[in-house]
Amino acid sequence: QVQVVESGGGSAQAGGSLRLSCVVSGYTMGTKCMVWFRQAPGQEREGVATTGDSTYYADSVKGRFTISQDSAKNAVYLQMNSLKPEDTGMYYCAVGSPYPLFGCGLTARNYLFLNWGQGTQVTVSS
Image 1 (spheres, rainbow, N blue to C red):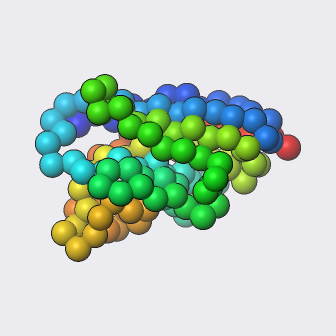
Image 2 (cartoon, rainbow, N blue to C red):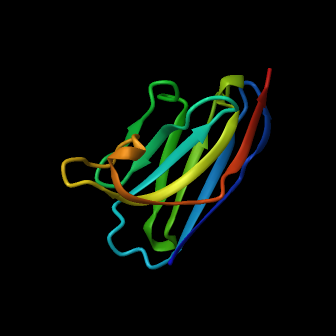
Image 3 (cartoon, helix red, strand yellow):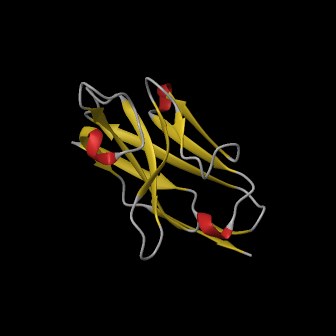
């Protein structure tokens, strides 16, 4: 069983920074990708950043967010700079493996399986 635990959420002023952490434990064989998703109230969940066989960012966070991985710690981080109020939402870490036709990406339905964390709230005020 895979456990995914996020931390590091909180409140920030616009223009500020937060760093999210995600630690994965348990049976992780077969997982190729680590992905950060977010969901704002009343909106659909969206992929924010992924790392694994490739690294991608949503257009809305390019140049502001950086995803990094520490394989020795089975951890992935999301450094969020120049935060905007529209970055507010619940941030979820997920690890999994995509269908064979896809590499690591930001679309959850392209994954054969994803193991999700419980989420961490990020609130950015103007």
